[in-house]
Image (cartoon, rainbow, N blue to C red; front, side):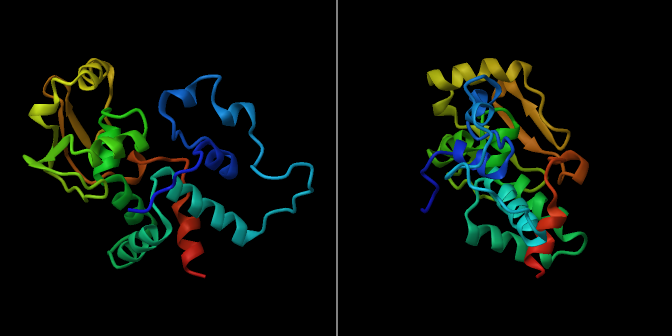
Length: 208
C-alpha cells in the first residue's frame, strides 16, 4: 500500500497552516510550523502572487493531506461525491469524515489521524464485532467501533482508556470510554465538520 513516508511537518509548512499531523506535539513549542512557518524549499527567492488556480490547488492539497489520502483515492472520493444528490463539497467531506481511521481519531483513540490509521491497520479494532484493519472502511449510522477484547489489556490501550475520560466526541458520534467503544449516530452535518476547510475550492479545482 502506497503511503507518504517523508516529514509530515513539511506538509504543514507547504500549506501554510497547521494540519495537526503529529498529535500532541503540534500543540507545543516543538511544533516545526511554529518555528518555521515559511514554505519548504529555497528561501530568499521572490514568490509570485498566487492565482485562482493556485489557491484551488493548495486547498485541494490541504484537504487531502489533513485526511491522509493519496491523490488517486481522493479523486475517487470526489467522483463518488459528485454522483450523490445534494452539495458535492459537503458529500466529499462526509465521505472523508466517516472513514474508519478518522472516526477512531474523532473518538479519541488516537492523538492524530496517522496514529489512528496505524492502530486500525494493526487490527486493534472491530466494526460491528468483525475485526477490521482497513483504514478507509466507510462507516454508516448505527455502526459500532470498539477495541478488540484481546487488545484492551495492552499498556497502550490502558493509557488511552484514561485519556478517554476527558475526551469529548463530536455530536454525530457516541463514545463509551469505559467499554472503549463508540458508534456512528448520524452522518455529520457541515457545521459538525472542520470549518477551516473550503470544500467549494476543491469542487472548483476538479470542475475546471
